[in-house]
Length: 268
Image 1: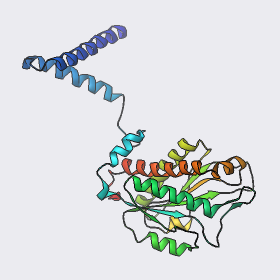
Image 2: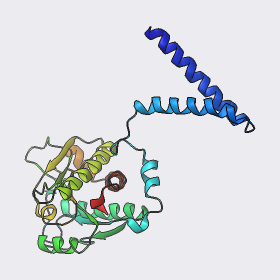
Image 3: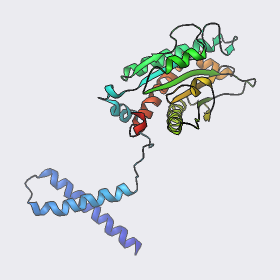
Image 4: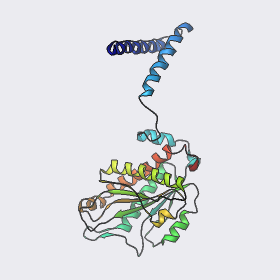
């Protein structure tokens, strides 16, 4: 019985495809021929759509993401990029590889800034040179911009030189579930792009209470772009092309988040 049903459906689909082909060849068909064609067409479409549910979180190609941003410059949010540390605050260091976190963070933030500007975003850098800015000043500057996203860029260290990989933190705010959801969604989008590009160890999206993501009003994440205490990752982070790939993936993650969450009233 099942076999006969499959054969019947296969013949039905073939017939529908022939109808579509013939319709392309002739626009002078009598109206009566359009009825079975329409029935066949919607039956086939209905059958295939049942097996491919639409989801805001399905994987879109890069072209689809960027296409979705076309013509929306007036609605773009401000992206606030916070290069961690600076000035007297070096952050973590790998003196053997001549790597200092504050420099890596600033370089990556500037590269991300350029990538986002090309997409049409308005971008603000908390710091654009090697100056020390305390946490209160960073938070105050970030909170000046409504309808924004906040991304703080850092690099990791560990007593264990075997520790490696990328992780992204967000603050789970019990008083603002909307911001928490948006921050989590942003973190997942950015991490996915960074792992896809770098092939680094995926350390996951994690909850954190860092002040720059806890006290800012906008959806906010803190990116740890790799361990400078790990020899292999440190060697990669010392190369500008690798930093550029991380920056581009952060920008793509933001664009993907923008496309996937534009239906949410909270974000407008």
